[in-house]
Length: 210
Image (cartoon, rainbow, N blue to C red; front, side, top):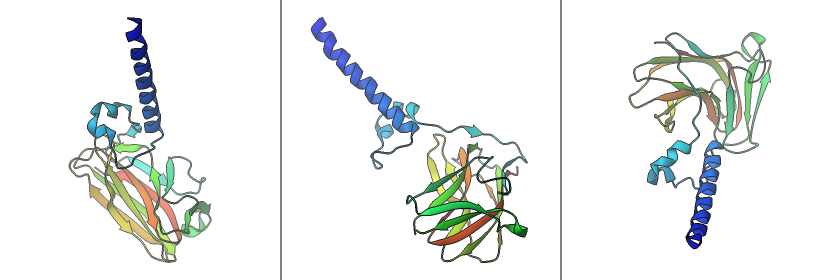
């Protein structure tokens, strides 16, 4: 019995350690093998995946409104992501509408970057949302406002939905209304871009219309 117990205990210890490291990887959103999905073969592992908090806005509720006058990335929460580390700078400058503060993005890379609204927004097909804001550019940089769509497991379905690009030295007003497609459970608003140059954003609003 003792001979049987020892290998079983070792196997159980290895399994527990493996599950712990897998759970830790999920919480940190690290993908060791990007093209290998263990969850596809072992669905139970989905329970260990990191899931973001969500908000469920009511009709007419403004989810995000940022003028950048009160500080850089305070409330509501905005997260920065860049494809190439140390290639993009984000700061707050007094060059916005009417001489107010705005967000400036300076990119020295052709790679993508984004500033994303958090937490995720829980939605139902057919609900109507609208985003609104102002942007301007210097150089070949190509910024946009757009929305990421997710399924019920918070896996991305569409990375650039209802997008509006801008390349304009004067301020350009961006406004887009859209309905949530079938199969979508969550979404988030973001501003993003590619190519080198500078762009500026001001007075961003994201609202559930109906």
